[in-house]
Image 1 (tube, rainbow, N blue to C red):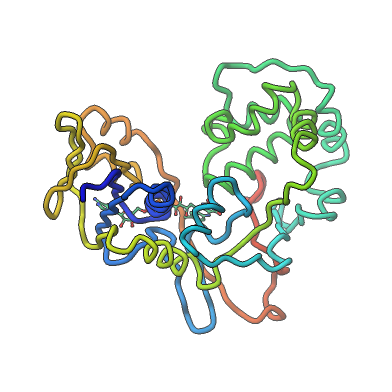
Image 2: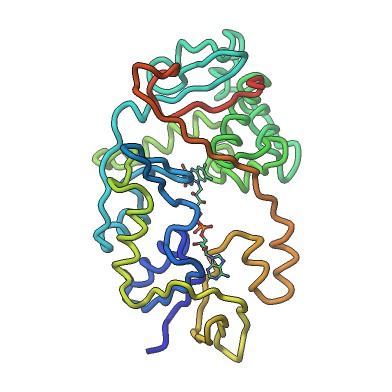
Length: 311
Ligand SMILES: Cc1cc2nc3c(=O)[nH]c(=O)nc-3n(C[C@H](O)[C@H](O)[C@H](O)COP(=O)(O)OP(=O)(O)OC[C@H]3O[C@@H](n4cnc5c(N)ncnc54)[C@H](O)[C@@H]3O)c2cc1C
């Protein structure tokens, strides 16, 4: 049977697209170059330690993710309470930034905090049609809180540069608060009021066997609609069909290329490739440290982000 959608790549992007197609009653066909699924989220097991080299947790319930995980019967469990503790390394010290400790944090000066609290009454206009993340947050939160917030968001989510990331492209929901209400705080409160009272709050979840285990469960739910060691080398249009070439040829009315931009540039048709090649990937090194909690020189929690003056 001809697939409804061919998905190139079985990282989490490709797997979730394919599971959603199947959930809606369509037939996906996933073509993966490697011998295993999961892509960069390849959990490392070393003795009793489990290291996630990429995404390791997610917020649930989620309007799109929850139905996919449920229909694929993938197992997820709430993360431990300590996973909600977060820290920032800045000016030579660790500052806790999540939970009640955030209010008392000395990461931002008293003056900086006062400016943050004035945000709902500060009237500003965008300085350009596509403000940088830092420009946007400094305009809304003041120079100190804005610089700190932009640095942490850029480092934490994109391993990126707050001066180069577009606020609107990187954090569209946040910019929409300002568009709608003229203030992040007022917009956030309005959104909270609009939420149904009984709507469950999203909480951090993990997969009991790591992300690789979760990827294997999603793959199992796809059965024969997933092929490993099937590297795709071309995607081209032929009439009203897409033709995907590699270890043979597959055809379908739709194709999703779920690869990193540089890899996608090698397989997609001509005009798209130069655009994809312009995308910059952050240079990320992942280092795993393990030990007994009592011996570690850091408090327990999900990790530490580096602040603007963290070196
Ligand atoms: C340290 C770190 C922390 C992160 N933390 C988070 C987080 O907290 N939350 C979050 O949402 N995200 C996080 N991410 C990002 C997230 O892990 C990735 O965005 C996501 O796993 C990428 O999935 P993908 O499917 O897009 O790509 P990939 O994982 O790169 O998968 C692409 C797949 O395509 C295959 N492939 C390549 N070329 C071909 C070809 N020619 N033909 C067929 N198959 C091919 C590859 O073998 C691979 O399996 C983090 C990333 C890192 C590095």
